[in-house]
Amino acid sequence: MRADPEGLFETMLRAGADLPLLDAHLARLSESAQTFSIPWPGAAELRRLCSERAGAAEQGSPGEAILRLVLDAAGRVLFEERSLRTLSRPLRIVLVEMPVGTAGGAHKRTDRSLWEQIARQAPPEADDAVLVTTDGEVLEATVASVWADVGGAWVTPPLDGRVLPSIGRARTLARLRAAGAPVVERPLALEELCSASALLLTNA
Image (cartoon, rainbow, N blue to C red; front, side):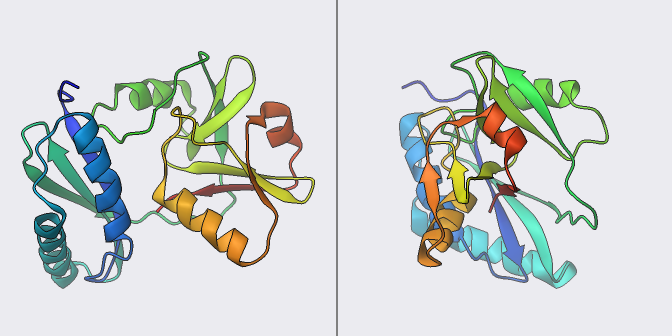
């Protein structure tokens, strides 16, 4: 497949000098690089670069932050960092309708035109937007996976190629199952989301 003109990226939690989910992020990035024929520096080299960057960042900004790893179309590695946003109030979301068959897809590409289009449709007071197809199927939020408590079970949309195989999604799925909580991966209707007893948005 032809390389993506922009590249790929991963957003990771930096806790001090530690990147708790680094291996999972690199595994997903490797699969995407192979899909788009982007040169792969190797997991060991990327792990070294990420660890060095996290250690240097921790010196000037201890605590938690978000580290963004970019792998451009030529295989070059870039880093960006921003503060970790926290909320002291309930999350505000808005529903954004998407044509059937479209969504962000299974790869984190640096071409963010779709998400910019979504952001323009959302009111400024919204914290995130949940994507819903024109036939009423819930997909994901712009920066998170969606979970709804439907009839006592946590329901999350399946990995059908339209939603990102989120690191946070996989971790939440494993934790819920380990705790013995009912959890189902299946299509989630908008009506179910609106009538759910609880809503959960997760990311890494």
